[in-house]
Length: 126
Image (cartoon, rainbow, N blue to C red; front, side, top):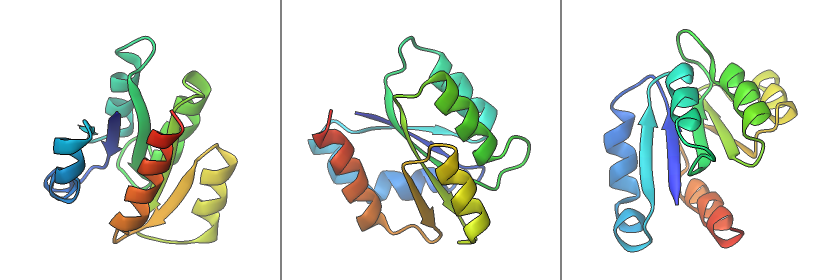
């Protein structure tokens, strides 16, 4: 299963690779990283149909926000599950994300056990 992590902070890649090292090794989980909303859309559009099954994206990024990326991605690729993350657990971002088709909404710091459960549910249903 291919997962796309979208965040403008590049150090997030090491953190996710460390937290999911067992799943990468044992369950064939593949992590792909994008550092902007546009880069995420480029990755999703590079294959038809996209092999990415799940996107986990930050909301607050320079340029295209995660919410803008979410709206465009859900329109083009409605089958892809997308969850959002924000340093601010405000109801406005939560409501916008859910109205735009987000599967879930996380706040920073990431609850990796909850994220692991969400990914496990997606794997089980595909």
